[in-house]
Amino acid sequence: TFTGGRLDKVIDRASSNSEELILNSKNRRFAAGITADHLDLMGFDYEFAKGLSGRYYFADLDDIYRQHFFGLLASQPLGSGTLSADVRMMLSKDSGASNAGKIDNRAFNAMLTYAINGHKLGLGFQDMSGDTGYAYIDGSDPFLVNFVQINDFANADERSWQARYDYDFGKLGVPGLSFMTRYIKGSDAHIAGTDDTGGEWERDIEVKYVVQSGPLKDVYVRLRNASFKSDFARDADENRVIVGYTLPIW
Image (cartoon, rainbow, N blue to C red; front, top):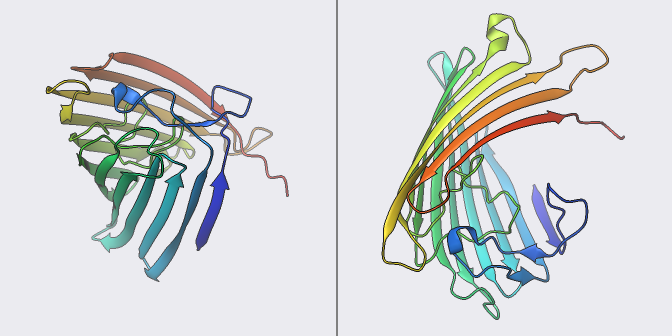
């Protein structure tokens, strides 16, 4: 499967109008308010065999950074369940006029998951190396396994671990109801503008229900709670209620 395109505007989840592409500057990793004219991207996914596929993508945020993405997805029956692996590597460098200054980051991240009888247990690892934190467009999904409800654990030199548990209540006769909780712990994060390092953690809980029949069929409700604590960033406790529906238009 081949993908390619150019993006020159975004519509943020909290806005109804198109806006410029802006570089994310969380925790002052980069200068604030740096904009780009466009993002060019191209890449492909290839299935080597059943349960094994590879991915490569290239992107250039005009006069800010270039990024290479390499990914591997694997799934294999193990005992009565299934063992899955999602391995990702991103290489980022400043490009063109380098309007955001130096960008030098290597982001390795991976998630290993075992699913059996409605239960899923996942272990994730994310490691940032290079001279800067991870670069991505503000408001977008940076596609890191430890990008969660509040935090992204993507500061320079930061290393983080995740433990995650999911359960599908369909196995208990309640189809459409599911539960998820995860805990992420980060350490050795370089604090911008200092020689210090810090740690942070986040705990997320989510309950989701998808209506199975009737006039509201496929409407879903998600209840989310998150708690985030950090040595160098503002702590946060957050609750979200999300109602969604997908409407086929052709």
